[in-house]
Every structure is written in C-alpha cells, then in structure tokens.
Length: 369
Ligand SMILES: [Zn+2]
Image 1 (tube, rainbow, N blue to C red):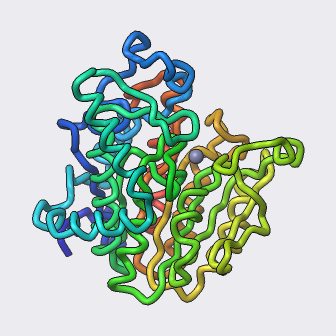
Image 2: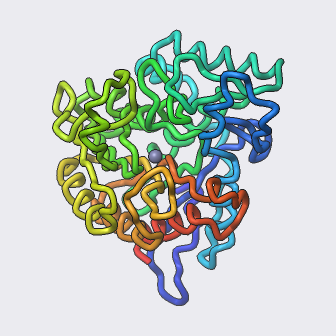
Image 3: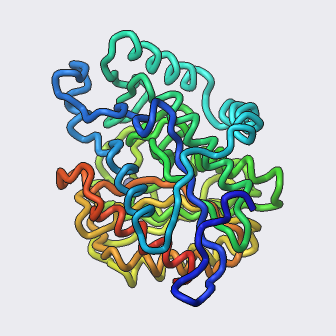
C-alpha cells in the first residue's frame, strides 16, 4: 500500500506495518486552519469575537507539535504532508456531494463567504450560525474541506494491517447539519463515514473525545448502515435541567439512541479515569460489532491536565484505548479531534506536550507495541 513504508520493526522484532499518517497543508505550510497559521493577537479579533477568542483552543501548534513528536520518535514515523494530489482530485467531487447531503447548503455557503471576507479584512470573524467559541479566518473554509478530504482518503485506504491517521485541524465532531460549533466547521468524520459506504456494507464510528459528538450523531442518525458511539463526560442533572438552546453540544441523554437506534451515548463520571474509559470502550465496541470498518474520532481532552474535562485519564491510558481499537480487527481510520492542554499551558510548540504524548501512546496501542 502507498506510504506503508512506516517502519514495522522494533529492534530486531518485526511487528507488522504501522500506522500511515497524513496531514493537510492548506493555507501555506503548516499555517492552515482556524485562526490561521499565526497565533491570535487580541487586537486582530473582531469586536464580537473577543469572548469567543478567549476560549479558542484549537491552534496550529497542536498539529505542529504532534508532527514533530511523531517524526522524532525512535520508531521512524513519517507524516505525509498531504494525501496524493491525484487521489484528492478524485475525492473532491465526492466530498462536495457528501457535504451537500450532511450539511445545510446555506450554512456551507456562509462558512465559505465569511472565510473569504476575512481574506480582505485580514481579521478573524465570528461565524453567525454557530454556537460560541467558533471563529473563522481566511484559511478556515479550505482547511475544513481539506481535513474532510484527508480523513476520507484515510478511510478509503486503511486496511486491517495498515491503519491510517489524519492529523488535521479544524476538528469536526460538533459540526451539525446547520451549525458549526466548538471550533468545528464541517463534519469530516461523517464525510468519511458516508464515503466508506461505497466500499463497505456497514461503518462503525467510535468517538472518545471527552465531549459529546453531537455533530456526528446529528449527521448520521438517518443512515442505519452507520453506527455511532460517543463516549464523553456526563453533565450533571442540575446543568441539564437548566434552559439551554437545542444546539447545545452537551449530551442530551444516555438513553438518546437517535430516531433509528444507530446511536449510543456513553456518559462517564467526573474523575472516572482509565477503568471507566476501558469499560465504556468495551460496551461501545460491542455495540459496533459486525461493522466492516472502524472510524475513530480521536480527541485527547479526557487527559487529567486538560481543563476542558474532568475525566482524569493519564497519558499512558491512551495506549489501552489504541489496543482496544486494534482488537476490533477491522480496517481503522483515525481523525484528530480535541486535546488542548499544551495551548492552555502556554506551551505553544513544546515537543514534549501532553497532547503529543497521549497520541504517541495511542499509536503504540494501535500498532501493538
Ligand atoms: Zn472535546
């Protein structure tokens, strides 16, 4: 397989092909995506975006740090700057068709329009049809499209022995039919799931980001050949009972299975740690049993140092997560979702960041190291 040259050797021991990694360099070098390649400067923010910007945690340094950590690891991993251009060309029409199915056309147009407006003003802007914390800059539209294509490519090329990982931004699992939120603009995971139906009879998605993947659930709930499991931190009844807008990304309920029963929500309690995550993965993968391919929404914000959740996983616990997914025994395609500790800690480019550590453990688990 293309790019399967990732080393499959640990010392003298052959352990089979490793994960193939792809990123997307839309926007110039590594400067793609939400809020561009530069760090946000407060004076550049729109007036109505100041409050949002305070919470924008998806920044370019996340992916830069992951790539440098993967490539400097002793295993000899290489992150391809993009899927092959000939494949991307073929995928773009399919991607656009899927996007027009899973997202409202006026919403898709607005992401494009706002992004192009930022080109002339040079400033990020708040996306109107969005929940809070979602700003757009001149790279955002092309970055979101490229992220979707990259994950679609990973899903179409992954095999039982060669998993693929799209190390991309912006994340996607909160993007619903009509709305971007939580830094997510277009739903890359749903795009990859629908694309996978060309090749597979059934598709399983497991999402272990600490937050409810409301966007994926919303985009796939009518397609019973796709099954979706979201494992996330449960919200206390006090908060749940407060009056909240219908598009609030927090989990509606553990018993919400969607209109067709193809959705499973698993809520974890604050401080649940490794054991709770392991039990949830066991239950979640049981729900997905029989699916022909497993897509993974890989968020690492359940880590104990991540202030966006209280799930208290340690970096090494992500090895267990990778092992469980490996044991599922189908082709595996992974897309990066959350995981922000390095930003919150102010370590913009640290190669020893928590996010990168989690991801390395996770990949070791997938590769059976
Ligand atoms: Zn998250």
